[in-house]
Amino acid sequence: LELLESTVKVNESDVFWVTEEANILYGWGSELERYPMYHKYITKEEEVELPEDYESYKEELEVNKPEYLESRAFTSYVSGVVMSHASAEMKEMENVDRPLFTLKKAADVIKDKEVLDDFRVTYLKGQLRRTEISEMGDAIEYLRANVSDEELLVDFNKEYEDWMGLAVGNPGLDFVGKDIEGNEIHFSDFKGKYVYVDVWATWCSPCRYEIPFLKKLEED
Image (cartoon, rainbow, N blue to C red; front, side, top):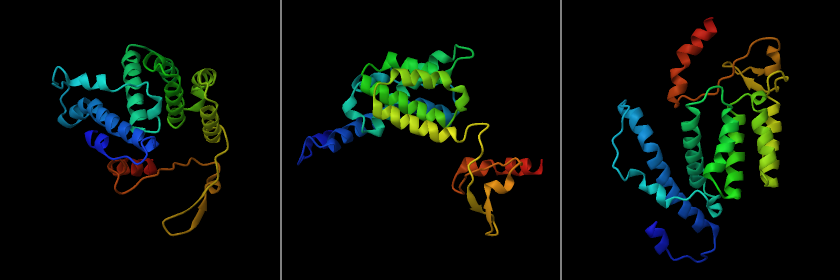
C-alpha cells in the first residue's frame, strides 16, 4: 500500500488507483479472515491460538465504501463478513430460510445502500446456482422489494429467467456433445431416461476423488 501511495500517478482520479488500493487492503484482510479456517483444515486441530490483537486488522477495513465496489477483493471481503455474522446466528436456528435470513442480516452489517444492494444481488445470484429455485420464493420477493438499484435488478432478473429454464419440471435444454469415439450425441437422444452430467478436469483433485463413486453409480 505504501508503494502504491508513493507511485507517481498521471491521473489520480482514474478508477484504477482506487480499485487497486481496495484490492491490496481487502485482499490482505480476506487472507487474515480465512487463516483460522485454513489452519484448522491443514492441522486437523479444532482450536487455533491467535494473538490477542489478531482481529485488529478489521478496524482498518470498512465495509461501507461504495467507491470500492469495482474491487472484487472488497466485495469478497464484504460477503465474508456478512456470511460470518449470518452463519453464527443460523447455527442456533432450526428450519431457517438461509437465503432470506442472510439478505435481512446484511442490513445489520452494511449501512451504505449502494454496497448493501450490490451484496444482496450478488449473493442471491450465487444462490440461484446452489439452491432449488422453488425454495427461494420468499428470498427473491424480498430482494425485489428491497433493492432500489434498477440496473442490479435487471441483471438479477435476467439471470433468474436463465436459471428458470433449468428448474425442476421444465423440459431439459437440448445440447450436443461427442462420446469417447467421436460420435455426435444430443441430450434429447436420452429422452425418458435418467441422465447424469458431470463436468470435471484431470487436474481437479475432488473430480478425481469422485471417479470410483461414479463407476459404482454406473454399475448400480
